[in-house]
Image (cartoon, rainbow over all chains, first blue to last red; front, side, top):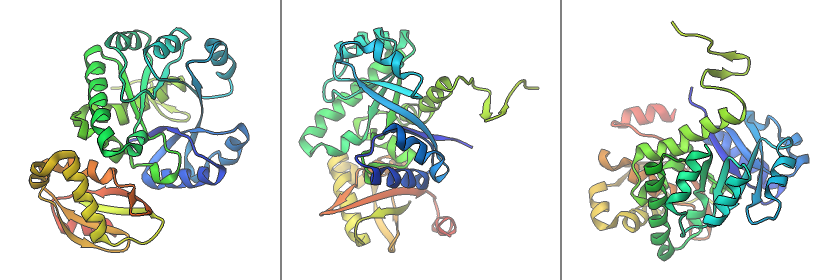
Length: 225
Length: 95
């Protein structure tokens, strides 16, 4: 059975956390990356049958970026750097981040950044929830930027991840609906599916230290015949 | 295409949701895209809508559904829960 993952959910308040998790479970997700306080994780662990990944977002403009990453890597499953331009991406990659959340739309990273991302085996994440907040006029520029990001990523073989970045339950989308949100930018369905379904799972396997033979806890493929 | 109303702050008429869907299609793909999609509302209830569209435009219609998050002042969350070539199969899946 396919496991759908939404790597980025950042609720506004405590009430929204439960709403989001309940809705995510209804929409078919099995794993959610949640940005919340440490005390909240203990309360919501296993809520609605979801596996919850502890996630923290760090602004890539902070001074001691590597120091923060090292400090937080034991507490959290997912540590991402919030990048707004090319400089941020380079700083985050230098500091060893493997997930870069790009928040600079409608600007796009340079094509050389994608080579760096590919070389460091990092993932570039786009929050699709941001697309809902833009007006009609801005959306044209946003779609153009999204199309360019996908084009550069496929040319340089960099890995993209699409996440919701939802702040409340109404901003969540079902996995395939989430993927379809970049279709108006002219991206092909295959590319979108890789970014929305395949790449989040490969990232999850990577952070959990498991290879492709992983089936579930305690069960893995040891050989084939 | 079976569209499920997962969450809504108030009850919204299916015809209104469908008209917003058509507006979104026209906004993203233009009138030409809207005509190619050939969408029309077949059935609707409190928690679902069944629409018909051209099979070559399914992903585009799905994207237009995904962009509906607000109708008037009310929040709404929709999900494309099933796509099928026949109404009979969609109704079976609804149960």
